[in-house]
Length: 180
Picture 1 (cartoon, rainbow, N blue to C red):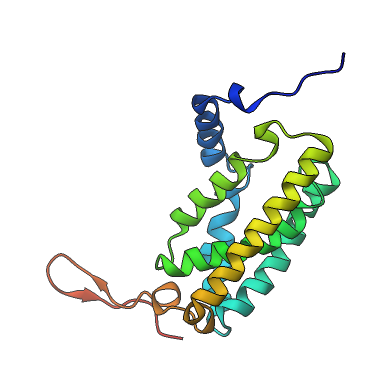
Picture 2: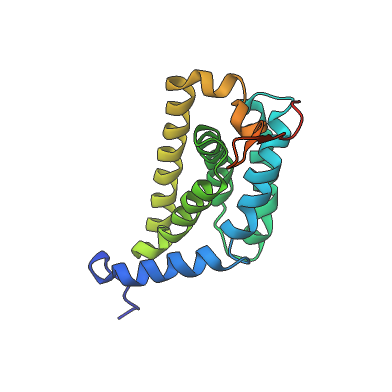
């Protein structure tokens, strides 16, 4: 008799929350090491001269290349590469629609990496099939945001690229960074 795989009923919320928490604070496990650079720095820089759609495409390619070592060393399946590219659009959309919140993109990225098909016990061809379905779902979500929120993809929101004057308690304002 071969090894048994975990069933969905054997997953515990405490176990998943522990993985979520560890991934959240571990700078070597993705979100904390990536989001400040990709969304916090690169997105505003790219969107200073490009539309969010073009910026997402460019960043998606860069992020996919960034993840190539994970595929080479077995930390990510080959299907993970197009998933990484496509989900970059959702991260950029979330970043822009939350006024440039790196925290929210970090939490979204962390949850996406915590609740993987492998954590649900999929292996072998079942894992491949589940990842292909996940790619289709993420692609549909991206197409949905592009079609249903067209203004978000045409121009970068002002708050994501220029914070403007910063309020001070005394009622005075401190000038923010110069407008592009």
